[in-house]
Length: 97
Image (cartoon, rainbow, N blue to C red):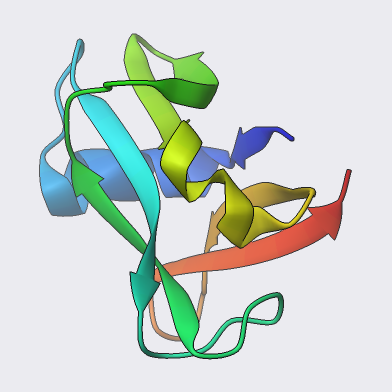
């Protein structure tokens, strides 16, 4: 399993969340909502400190990660993070690894 962050998504993190070099962004499973890979759950995202990260990627000195306890949500899929051009919000897609 891997995390892919588009150039537009990286810009979104800088502009919308004011993420600075050295900060860490966690993607996690949250109860409620929907996703194409897990009904009743959706993907959340927050600035957080890694505890037991199972998947990481560092881009421009920003660490993006998924904790081991949230790995079940992805069900063997890679996470792709981009920006929806209509809403100008983050858009997540999943592809089987």
